[in-house]
Image (cartoon, one colour):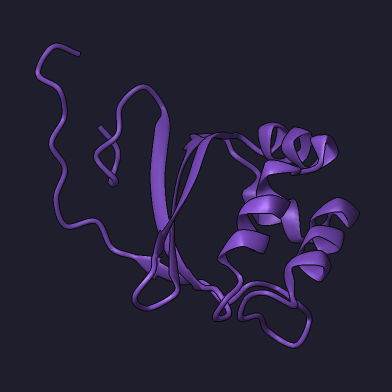
Length: 117
């Protein structure tokens, strides 16, 4: 078991982002139409499962993803498709001046695994 409590060489991380008010439908639409080349880049970087949830009261987006132990996510910001996606999303969520989404890492505090793994 690694530091995040996962087994079999996988790691789960979570982070928070913030959606601009009134942008839920547009955010969902853009993600329904996610570019295949972006999906490929995430897969090649080691991302195996990626989910995003919305707290409607605060507009906070909660993201959780599973990645391989040998992931290369740190190189994603250097990819043109990633930069293009962030530029595309910058008008509907909080970002840094370079359009990188503002992300706050979340610390794991509890995990319950199925006993029949």
